Length: 313
Image (cartoon, rainbow, N blue to C red; front, side):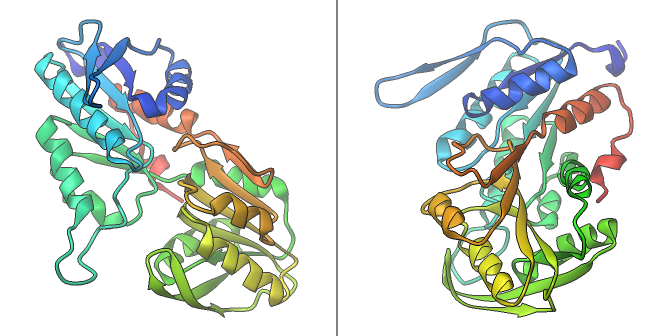
């Protein structure tokens, strides 16, 4: 039977149920039936409650910490392999553990590569994800990786704002490539923040490279965790004469004092996707769904159509 007419089914990990329902609706199928049994000590076991033999299945689940989310994805992939699914695609809107993509000091792990190897060992035949923390993570896999860009979601929203004197900013040197890509699409200037960390999530010093006087600034980053970098950058830019500062961050990790910092900051708006389920505790946060993007890519993957437009800024 040709691959193009193999039945496709969509299942979800428990942490991404709401997003998976949106994706399945847009795709045009019902969400598959999977249940999870939990033992008293916390061990859990997912179970497919319908036949998946010979099918292509998409398993939707972001792997943000804690470790339960990654473990659930691995168990669901393994269960699908043992149930004779023909193609097993891990759809990971947020690829967790990606900040550990290199050895930045002695005697530390490269967690992103370890996760890649575990997904492949479990039985994943393809990975679909969005806005990886570092592009080189794709090279950790021996299986195909479709790395989508949330810019296809954010750029139309930014253009609708019709901001004058728009300037795109990166909150750190590592995000400069992303900022330049957005600036090219929006035909705007670019500024970059240079920061030094005392330790993880603690900034000791930040300086601005570029002029924001009289500009409406849009900060661009792949994720917002404690919001320390983002809010400090926004406050610095307002001090340097910016008219307004808003931020685009694909993945709303929002841990620690993130909401408190966002509320107290000079950020006008924080625009995120629903790649990670989160409680929206701030009126400043605008959530744009990535469901349409993933549904379209999954459909095209299943029917062997091009998805190259989703890799472009």
